[in-house]
Amino acid sequence: MAIGTGLFQPRLLAAALFALGAGAAAAQTPANDFPTEARADYVFACMAANGQTPDALKKCACSIDVVASILPYDKYVEAETVLSLRQGVGRQATMFRAANFEEMVADLRRAQAEGEIRCFY
Image 1 (cartoon, rainbow, N blue to C red):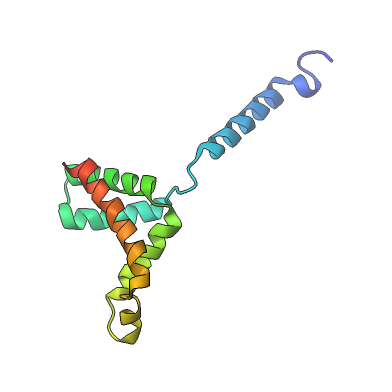
Image 2 (cartoon, rainbow, N blue to C red; image 1 turned 60 degrees about the horizontal axis):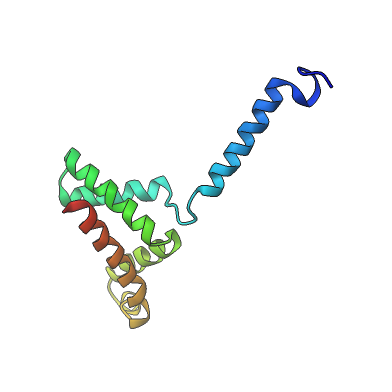
């Protein structure tokens, strides 16, 4: 088969190489990668607590990167949900203050503390 025809056409070869590269890049993406929305939500809340400055933006973005490197996203969501439900009143809120939820909240707190140490000091 001559070059420029069939499977050796430059466009097909380029498309095949691109597809292989995209597959390799997807395989290298961490399993616990946080969605952009979750990262942005964390950064907005962090900046509300630490100031609306470019320096706070850098530190808060660094902090969520550290949290994401330590805690899988599903565990992060579970712990954030428990913390949110604890803010309520009544029997249901009390249920989420039970000892069986302490470990997941503690994992989140440790990840956040690591982010604070690495990024804010």
